[in-house]
Amino acid sequence: MRIFGDYWEGVALDYLKKHKLKKIQRNFNCKAGEIDLIMTDNDFLIFVEVKYRKNDDWVSAAQAVTRAKQKRIIKAAQMFLLKNKKFQKWNARFDVVSIQGNKKNPEIDWIEGAFY
Image (cartoon, rainbow, N blue to C red):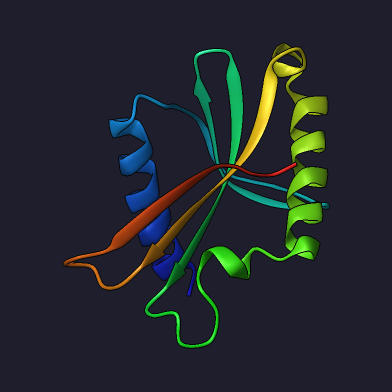
């Protein structure tokens, strides 16, 4: 299943790069959790959660980023900042890239400042 997730994270990464964001790290892991993508945009450090759903019959990709998931991402971001002191004074933001559909025609929705 990791290969499947890697594919959609790559789609999100390409999409964000086209919008002038720069990649810092992909798949940051720590005891607190995982962050799919860490990017910069001017003076913002952006922690990105990528969610894919083939369709939204049950719950949309964006809705799948529950409050519990948000808390894990925030804790992981705090760990990233402890390990990467050069980013500690940067403005931080949590974004979600929601992808639905199939490989030929994915629908991408980038939600800036999705949670705090």
